[in-house]
Amino acid sequence: MPSYQDQILTPYDIKHLKLKNRLAVAPMTRVSATVDGLATSEMAQYYERFAKGGFGLIFSEGLYTDQKHSQGYPFQPGISEVRQAGAWRPVIERIHAQRSVIFAQVMHAGALSQGNRFVDTALAPSDVRPKGSQMKFYYGHGPYRVPQVMSDESIADAINGFVSASELALNVAGFDGLEIHGANGYLLDQFLTDYSNQRTDKWGGDVSARIGLTLEVIKAVKAAVGGKAPVGVRISQGKVNDFEHKWPEREGAAEVIFGSLDQAGIDFIHVTEYEAWKPAFEGCSETLVELANRYAPNATIIANGGLHVSEHAAEVVRSGADIISIGKSALANPDLPNRLKSQTPLADFDGSILNPIANIKDCELALGY
Ligand SMILES: Cc1cc2nc3c(=O)[nH]c(=O)nc-3n(C[C@H](O)[C@H](O)[C@H](O)COP(=O)(O)O)c2cc1C
Image 1 (cartoon, protein in one colour):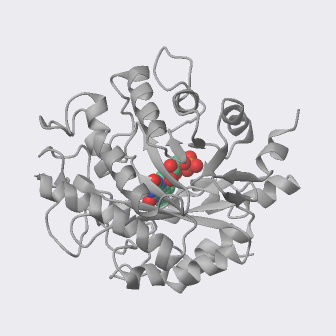
Image 2 (cartoon, helix red, strand yellow; image 1 turned 90 degrees about the vertical axis):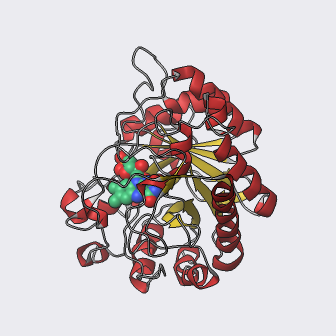
């Protein structure tokens, strides 16, 4: 039986796209774009390091999709117009030069929007103030605003935003694939979550209704760009403003969520948990990865959460993950795949790099290759 190192460093085909290995950089917002959401040469340098360091796949940070309510943070990059899409081209060229690929993560912040240069209101399924406080390291302070309830028209606008952002990402920027952000407490996850979605129309109710907007976005995006590149979705239980959240319907929710994503023809599901190798629910033996694998047998499963530790990653691969994505440890080790190959120990992640603001720091760029 091959070791985890051997297994994870082998090529993998995601749809028709060839990855040189199964190690991915997780999406990480670094609020380092220009004020009008353009990727910069500093960002190109930052992303290129992961490709030079051996990662087969890189996820972009969450890119806002429209010029209305989707932007979450000041200095967040967008993919809402040709100019923003074009700014990614030099980043992508540098990644391709290393035989690595990059997927765009398209996101709508919904109620968690704490910095938007187009509007000063936030939209959400229901007028429920998000738990917790705005994130200081993304220039936020104090409680989140109470969002406005989305109308049918604003829901249609949000869907159209995902579609046009996806077209720009593939056709203008040249990204190799798309990840629809359905996790971590942002708009689509607000629709999925019982307490933030109190709607009584077709978008609210049981879990099969609450996953409806995510499915609708997938359908619309696939109709526009499907077949051209892999289209996937990110799914989590926890949220940036509610780490401990668990789906109240437990395995029943997993069956509906992963089963309907599979039926929708999703190419990959990127499952993120705080500690991905642990059981998904108290008193349950299976991880979320195992449940995703069981109920979405046709999708590639990407696992995330504390998986820089090889023993944990090996466990998750054994239980059905096809690709492992690494967040914080990739910031400390942009060459993590090369280190794995040469059996060089990993550097510890130092959280102070994200303080006081989570922007890209010169000392990170100095970890060049
Ligand atoms: C600075 C930072 C920014 C992040 N931004 C995003 C993001 O834009 N989109 C997203 O889906 N997850 C985001 N995440 C979550 C990571 O993708 C990942 O799920 C998390 O760090 C756990 O993985 P790890 O244990 O390997 O770090 C972010 C995490 C960090 C540390």
